[in-house]
Each structure stands twice: as structure tokens, then as C-alpha cells.
Amino acid sequence: MAQLNDTFDATGVPPAAPMELLPPGRYAAQIVNSEMRPTRAGTGQFLWLEMDVIEGAHQGRKIWDQLNLVNQSQQTVEIAQRTLSAICHAVGQLQVSDSEALHFRQMQVTLAVEPDSRDKHMQPHEQRKQNRVKGYAPLGGVTPPRPAVPSASPPVRPAPASGLARPLPAATATPPWRRAG
Image (cartoon, rainbow, N blue to C red; front, side, top):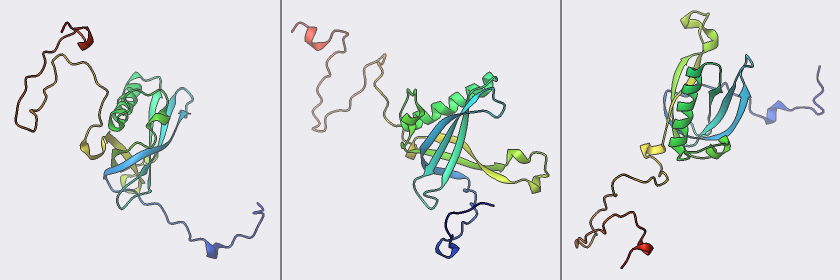
């Protein structure tokens, strides 16, 4: 028996409704919480991610994912690293040492509905269903800007709006302040 320290009045609080699965599809979301957690076997660690849907009819709903970044299986680690890379590219944060750098940055999350892996021993019609993250992409399909990387060829610039095309200065390795002029 547990004392509640007060009388709880259920008439003033709407009852919780069962949480339905999110339909398969793409959702605008952002990571709101993350932490490294030990695996069940205690031989590795996974990055646990909690995300909020930020737009549409399902705004406010939660999505969870976990990336096995420390594992005895190299293939498992590679899959987790590719997924983390997809998240980093989706939010435009390409170098991360703390998962908090990924928080509150919008991205697109693709969800599917699959049988719950805990019910493998049951008949298919008896298995529960669960949402599974299938991918991450930039929101709206537009890749966020990336830091400038030196290119092998000079960038192509559009002609000026006035219609008068001026030749571009030749690309050289000498900075402008060192050129003889």
C-alpha cells in the first residue's frame, strides 16, 4: 500500500488515452533529449534519442530511436555510425562530440510500422506493432548549408542581373593582398 499524501480527485483530470502508433510516413521532427545508455548485455552502449513531431496532425507526439555506437559487432557499429551521419547531415551539424549539438534542429524522420521485436515467438496475427525509424533527411528535402570546402575548380557564378557580363578574375593561389598590382 502506498500513501499519496493527499486525496487524488480523478474528476479533475482527464483519463490517459492509449497511445496509437503513428502512421507510416515522413514527419518534421527534432531531437529533444539524448543520452548514452548501456546495452542490456552490458557489453556496449547505445545513443538513445527522443524526438518530438513538430508539425502536422501529430504535432507533439514522440519518436524514439537508438544507435548502437559501442558494440562488439563491427557491422552494428557501422550501421549506427551511418545513421548518426544521416542525422548530422539532415540538421547541418557535420562534426559532433556531444549529442546535445543535435538538439532542437529540425529534420525529416521517416517512420514505418513493424512487428514488435519482443514478440518474435508469437504468431504474426498476435504480435504487437511498433514504429521504427527508417531514415533521416533534411526538412523539406533541402540540404542545409555546409561549411565551405576548397574545390578543385572555381565556382560558377551567375551573370549579373543587369545583363552586362563582366569577366571573372582568374583564380590564383596568391591571395589578393600579395598580388602585384
